Structure formats: structure tokens, C-alpha cells
Amino acid sequence: MNGELAIYVHIPFCARKCSYCDFNAYAGADDLVAPFVASVLEEIGRAPEGGRPLRSVFFGGGTPTFLSACDLTLILNAIRRKFAVDSDIEITCEANPTSSDVEKFLALRESGFNRISIGVQSFHPRLLSIAERDHSPAEAIGAVEAARSAGFSNVSIDLIFGLPTQTRQEWEETLERAVSLQTEHLSLYALTIEPGTRFERLHRGRKLTLPDEETELWMYEHAIRRLTQAGFEHYEVSNFAKPGFSSRHNRVYWLNEEYLGFGPGAVSYLRGRRWTNEKHPLRYIRKVQAREDLCTDSEVLDACAALGETLMVGLRLREGVSLSRLQDRFQMDALEVYRDQIEKLMRQGLLEREGDRLRLTYRGLLLANTALMEFV
Ligand code: SF4
View 1 (tube, rainbow, N blue to C red):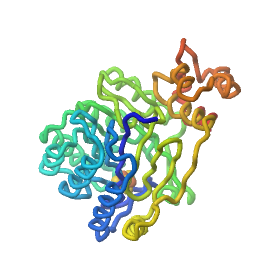
View 2: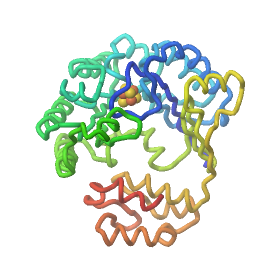
View 3: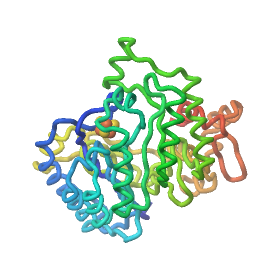
């Protein structure tokens, strides 16, 4: 593959750690910010594939807006110097309500960011407090309004359903509030209890009351109905967009195309090899300073494994995968190589074929996470 490349920059800082979060994110590490920025600039300067055209840039975390607009601009400018960045590519910055204001968003817009993705999770103070989010519903709404005032015409918000003790009515209200904000994009995630999180400790001690499976399924199906009715396209298992506003960056992951990641724990996928950077910010900084290899984990995927992965991620898209494109790319017939898995999912009514395309059925969509594990 030699076409356009996507770039991901991982900003590993947060004001505080949320109860459900197992991302590579650290609270109370303010003194690492300056050396981190210097290191990530250094890493970008040394990156392979210099001059290659980019499809998208995504600053994620952690909380990218924990950094000043000036630091974020420095990093974006380093990417511009290293790669070929067209003016119309998608450049996203994730943001948290408490580190977002009009001034910061104005500076980001001026420096070339054109998409903001805000972590909202819920519009209920009770649930925000259970999840140990550091903002109120009003601050989340204020962040969306600040992005608008700063001129962002592509705004996304993230919501979580299945939070402890969350009721159907609370989820309905959160969705209504989200619809009323008229953002172009919404990502909805079902809560999962991840190892090492506060929620996991509470869950082990039987101190967490989670909605039952039926309620969680109802929440997902209600969201599909309500958002579709409000003009959103349900284009991926967890993602909804107004026409023309699906995430171009995430599409690179769903199509299993090439990307480079910078920063602690960032993953890259290039020329059939996938590798992960040193995860801890301090060790990452030390390794960059000592010019040591940042990679802690690397694998080369053979064509068969790469085909399986491409099916697994591609089937998350509602449009499904094109069998002829898979054939062209891998020189293999997916229906032959993964015959058992595909037939099993079809028998279960989770997968369907329509001409050249293989896609999840509606039932498959509801069970996507387990169904797609067949291709691992
Ligand atoms: S703000 Fe996001 S990355 Fe940071 S702890 Fe919360 S969920 Fe995790």
C-alpha cells in the first residue's frame, strides 16, 4: 500500500481518571507535559514515510485539550513539515468539556484543525459523578457551543450507555439532549468493565449495579431508532453521522489501511507490520531523548491474518465489505479462506451477502462484538 496515510497523535494526559477508563491516560502528570511535547516533536521529525500525502490527522488521548492550543499547534505544524498535508484533509482534536473554551477552539481552528470530538458521555449529573467525569452537563453543552462559536462545522460527541444504575428514561433524555445540540456526528459506546479500572474493582466487590442485558440492548436499539429518525446515518456499529460527516480518520481503521501513530502507546500499521510505542509517558520521553527504539511490540501479519482482520473491522461498517476489493488486495477469496466462519454466521442469521458485499444483518449488528471475533 502506498497511497495516503492517516496520522494519530496520542496525548496521554487527563485532569482526572474516569471510573471506566483503561486508556493510556494519566492524571497528575502535569510536569511531563513539556518534555512530552518536545519528545513527540522529535518523534515526528524522525518518522518514516516523510513527504507521503495524508488522508487525516487525529489527536486523541487522554485529553488532547489538556495541552495548550500553542502546544497542539506546534505538533500539528511538525506533521505539516514532515508529510504532505492538503488543506481539505480531516484534522480532528478530541476535547474534554473542562479544558475547552472559545479561545482555545479559535486557536485550534486557526491552526488548521477542522473537526472537534467532545467527550460528553451523559447529560445527567448523577451519572457523570458515578463515572467520575470532571464536568457538568452545562459544561459539556458549553463546549459544543464554544466549538460552534469558534467556527467548527464538524463536531462530534461521545456518549456511553449501560452506565451503573442508568435508567431507560435517563438514556432517552441524554439522547434527546444530544439530538438538540445538532452536532454532525455521534459515537455511542456500551459500557464495558475493563481490568484495572475503578469500575472493575467495584464490580468484583459486587458494588456496581449495572443495567441488565435486555435494558442495554433496548438502549442501543432506541438510539438507532431515534438517531435515524433525526437524520443521522448509522454507518458503523457505534457511530452515527449526518450525510457527508462520517469520520474519515476512523474509516482508515475500519478499512484496515495504513496509519502512523505518535506518542506513548500509539500503534502504527505500515507495509504489513503493526507496532506499538512504549506505553508509559516517562519511559517514552527517556527513550526518545536517548534515541532508542520506541517499539515495544511488533508483528508482521501474513496475508491470511490480514484478510481476517480486514473482515473483522470492515464488517463493523453498515455498508459491509466488498469481496472483489478483498480479492484484489489480498489475492485470496475471503469466502474460501473464511468459509467456516462465514457460513456459521450466515446460519445464525448474523451475516448476509448481497451481490459483491458481505455485511452484518440487523441482528448481527446487535451482537457485532462477539460475532466478529470469529475472524480473529
Ligand atoms: S477523559 Fe477520556 S481518556 Fe481521560 S480518563 Fe476520562 S475517559 Fe479516559
